[in-house]
Amino acid sequence: MDKQLLIECHARIKPFIHNTPVLTSRLIDEMVGAALFFKCENFQRMGAFKMRGAANAIMQLSEKQKQNGVVTHSSGNFAQALSLAAQSLGVRAYIVMPENAPQVKKNAVKGYGGQIIECEPTLEARERESKQIQEKYGATFIHPSNDDAVILGQGTACMELLGFHPDLDYVVTPVGGGGLIAGTALAAFYFGNECKTIGGEPFEVDDAYRSLQSGKIEQNSTSNTIADGLKTQLGNRNFPIIQKHVEEIIRVTEEEIVFAMQLIWERLKIVCEPSSAVALAAILTKKAKFSGKKVGVIVSGGNVDVGNLPFKRLG
Amino acid sequence: MDKQLLIECHARIKPFIHNTPVLTSRLIDEMVGAALFFKCENFQRMGAFKMRGAANAIMQLSEKQKQNGVVTHSSGNFAQALSLAAQSLGVRAYIVMPENAPQVKKNAVKGYGGQIIECEPTLEARERESKQIQEKYGATFIHPSNDDAVILGQGTACMELLGFHPDLDYVVTPVGGGGLIAGTALAAFYFGNECKTIGGEPFEVDDAYRSLQSGKIEQNSTSNTIADGLKTQLGNRNFPIIQKHVEEIIRVTEEEIVFAMQLIWERLKIVCEPSSAVALAAILTKKAKFSGKKVGVIVSGGNVDVGNLPFKRLG
Image 1 (cartoon, each protein chain N blue to C red):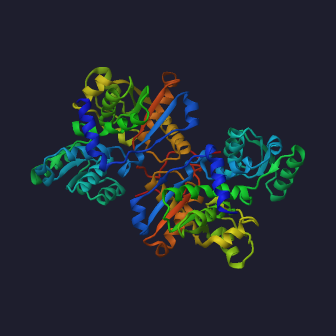
Image 2: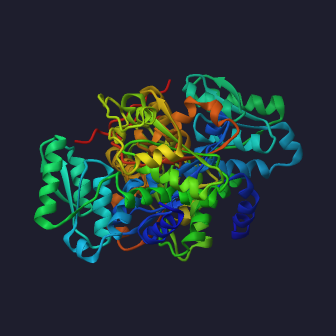
């Protein structure tokens, strides 16, 4: 995928997304010994960067495809993103969700006009159900992360960040299914000035770290992390981009994630998801690497249950 | 205090404050049936609007006064604001704090270069101690809310908001010591187009509501509210302004405050103090009044212990 595709993608989705603000914190900069620029995708429409890729994927469809709608299986942000993007574009969205998904997530999807199809909480059931929707309605399946149009869309956050700060040395993102980091790596490569892309990943779901080591897509055997958006694995579309353009994936502990998340909340005064904090946690874990550098940080989203937070009470 | 004083004040403090962003939420607008513009002073330096008044008060002093430093008694945001404003201006700040104030608040004041003088946790002890500092060092006492320079400084948030949205019908603020609402009311009067100022106040500390009823400054007999920044009472400098320029004070329950705060966190994705949420709570309590109107909301601050939040876990 080349530079021109990213430029066209950004021009295409611009009317349907926010150019989110970039925040800084003197105190966090002092802690790291670097200049950090937080691209706040928690302020994106529906509260996460996923809106970008979802909008681009739908806009790339033919008129005939749009008439038949789109389908995905997700219980997370992509379900909401595809619903809202589809609603904005006058397209029907079918969302296959496990029947035990939290009611609040079901309500969010419904609120954005998505049509929920419940299934058993297994990967097989989700895939079978979404196949049926494709056959029944002719709907087009959109994968949350392993799809070229989605990858390009996610890369536009980094494009916007580099538009304001063209001289970043690094850009750091969390790594889940690989769509965000692959798109970011492309944007950093084409629009940065030798800007390198780094991933942050929980030790508990370090499949991307191990995939880069082994040269093939690895799976997670555990998924015991607070960063619930990062439990998914890489795919054949994004993995080659990650192999080519991502310098390093830094792993972090659960304690490091919570610490970084609390810093973001208390110092930047913004609400972000645990998954988002993994990028800052990675930077804090390897301060020497970032010392004296200009570093972009993609704060990926802000959809979190504020009644169920991991923070400890202060003294 | 006239229009020119506000203009001069804003020009004076501009280099030392942030022109904070204004956020909106489609969902909150739908809930209220109005267009709300949230002026986010949680993103202000040190995390609250108090930075504005503190900077203005210090900048109005003579060179001789600046050399001798400033003193206040506060355990809240004004202590941090005066410390940081003084530090930015090369002035010494003495902060009289009750010895039982939380360590985190003492650390924040120290972090901004304030010099803490501890005293017994009574109003008498605080006033005696700050008198002694004035005598010993020749320091100038700056009141957190009942001071003309402070009132003017706090009014600049509303000036900035009206700069972006000149046609607001209402601007709503929380009411504590009266500095913010008095400054806001002056700004709305001079810079708005028939923009009316409304206060939000907890039933638990409804001294301002009762003061407007009785025509004299009333005190609180209880202080059992989560909005810990609003426990203070009005003063002789701000009360006449409030009497003249504030249309109404709307009282809210503790449940209404928590509900509004959760809405702000979950929908605007920002961290705000309970006191800040009182303004939105007031609007939600009297929706009919605001129906179809353009309403500014001053989100007063974001300094909160995220380990000790009132939110309920979602289903």
